[in-house]
Structure formats: C-alpha cells, structure tokens
Length: 301
Image 1: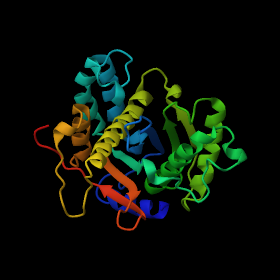
Image 2: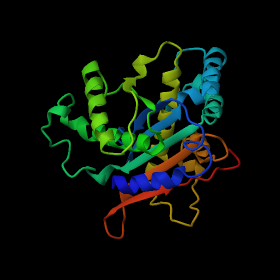
Image 3: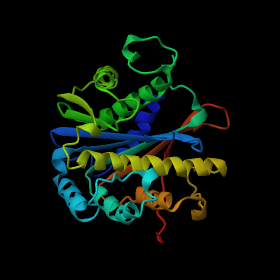
C-alpha cells in the first residue's frame, strides 16, 4: 500500500516548483492531525514540507502577522476558529501560507480501514514501542510511515531534516520524542536509498518565542481539520470523487471555515502545492483504494 501511495504522491508532485529546482540545506517537515472526534469519518494526517532557507519571506511575513494582525499568542487552530480574532486573521494567514515554496500533503484514512500493517502495532510487544500505550501505537506508526514517505519523496541527498509535530500523545515527553526519532530513522532507512544529513525531531515546545513553529503547525492543523470535515460530510452523503467527473458539493452542508479552507486547498496558482490523498475501501471488491482528490475552487468564496 505504501508503494501505491508513494506512486500517487510522486505523480501529484510533478511539475514546476518544489521539490524541483534550487533546494536548500535544511528540510522542514511539520505535521498535525485530525479525526479524534466522534463525528469524524476519517483520520487525517497533514505534512507541510519545505526548505527553511528558501522561505525567508514567509518568516518575515509571519513576524509581521504576529505583530500587526494576531497580536496575542492565540494559535490559528481549526477547532478554535469560532474565536472572532482568529476568523478575521484567517484570510491573511492563508494568503501568507500559500507563498511558501513547498508542499502541503494531507492523507485521509477511512475510520473503518483497520490496521495498515501486516502485524498491528497495537498487538506487538516490541521494546521500541514501549514508550506509548497500545491504543496510540497504530496512530504513531501511521504518522511515522506517512511522514517518512513524504520526506523520501521530496528530500535531496545530504539534506538535514527537522521533523516537527504538535505536542500531543505521540510526543508528550522527552522519552517519547527520543524514541520517536529512533523509530523514524529506522523507517526512513527502509524507504529510500539516499541518505540524509542530520535528523532531528521536535515539537512546538521547541518554539523560541516568535511562534513560527506554532504557526507552521497551524497550517497543517487547518488543512487536516478542513479535510476531515469535508470528507466526513461527503461520506455521510454517499458522495465520492469519480475520475473524470466533477462532483458538485452543497456549501450549506459544510461549516464556513471548512468551505474557506477547502477553497484555499483547491488553489493551484501559488507556490505552495496542496495535495490530498485518500485511503478507503473500493466498494466493488473491498480492496483498498488510493485516490488523489483534486478540489476545484468556488469563485464566490
């Protein structure tokens, strides 16, 4: 399945811009996730990947955003967009994010998919996973395998990697973070033939006070949250994309924040590539299906 996903991702990354062209020395991969709430029909895993030294413009824009637009230390998270200050700031935040020379890749996995692994991590009594409760291990291994697959698809030999995730149950303490780095390195070693330079894993706790890491994680958070709601509503309405056919959606079926972010995810004219890959069952034979979901923007939004 990972080979299939890798092929779909490689096709989606074809074209001008990242990861082609001039590259930087240090690759960042920033991850956030959604789907834990009861109404979610999908688990979503979002990875924002870019060369930090090729994106100095965004770092300047982020500082201006924090000093002029969202002056408090509020985080731009999907679930907190009921807050008026965050709603007002959302458009400018997304406008800056789409200028990042990189890729935002969201994987959505149907809740009833089951384990992605031949031997479920939940059932394994493996020393390397002892830092996590059994109930967390499937999620952890999905995140690390999908994250490694993304890095394998966009990295260049010898690049240093900084892998950042939100500070949640997979990286809630230093022991888990150290062990996660070790497991990621093992998985990475089985993904590709080329080697990286230095590999470091961190969380938003590593932020130096300017909230740049928080805001980068927020880009992934917004994408994961909107994709989760979008696909969950589509599943309840028995809608799914069919190759060669544009499937219209009723905006009234979705929250305003999901429609706004989904419209932004559909944009293809700016530097940031936005890719949604869905894993679910093929209704015809019960096999797993991997789909590159292409959204079309609504002109009225």
